[in-house]
Image 1 (cartoon, rainbow, N blue to C red):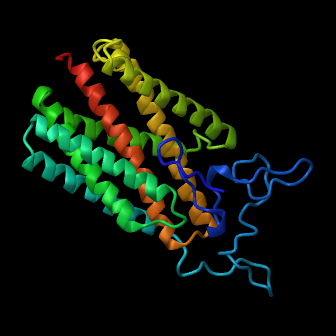
Image 2 (image 1 turned 30 degrees about the vertical axis):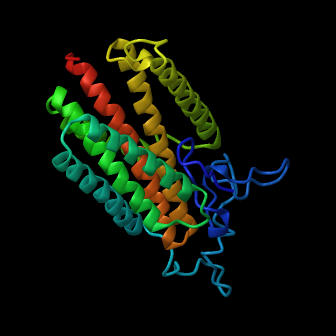
Image 3 (image 1 turned 135 degrees about the vertical axis):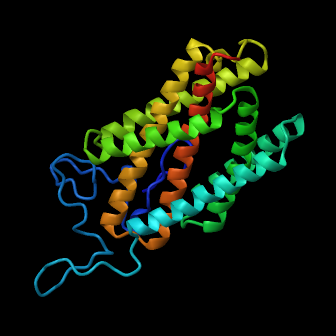
Length: 289
């Protein structure tokens, strides 16, 4: 099984492609936890990997398929998507001045990016065109928003980039050191918190739009807004850990090389989430609203 929602979950590689993500089949009562990479004491989930045939003579694993996903594939695809986001952001920053028109274009670009993400999420196979298109429109949105923040809080985008890199690096270090262990329970609890957070933020937005909550409500540029921003960044880090786990298991399962586009897609969305929240946090702590 695989999750098909790029916003509320991190989509895993399909079981048909040799990888199940964190929605892996749960073990039956009294039986081995085969196929569940997060189950404690589970049998080797890679034993039945169709992309890792065994040597029938000696029973040893055969060489990895030439078309299996590797870390180099993930890195290169992620570089392409993040590069596209960066180019789109720089062009938007340079070409579009801060104005009501540019704000409208930013909202339109964000909506297009969201639609492309949803379309990709329901496809059985990754589409590089959709993923790169998402990255391009997301970049336009980020460029306009970053320029807007910079016009009020000079240097905020640069600080947000540094903060995003620091948070991402720290998350990766804790994951590789196994200080963070991505289990089925961890994923369920984290996703519950993430979905609840998004629902609350959506309600808060409606209250602000209709004038019920003033000064941004929970998203104000005060102490409460800072607390909410920190929580949002922690949720972004949670998404990153799911991405890291899916990439690690996808490579171990020998998922097809094309699935590296999904890995890049998930990482890009997580990093965009963290950057936007970091941008708000920098503005809040600048003390000039």
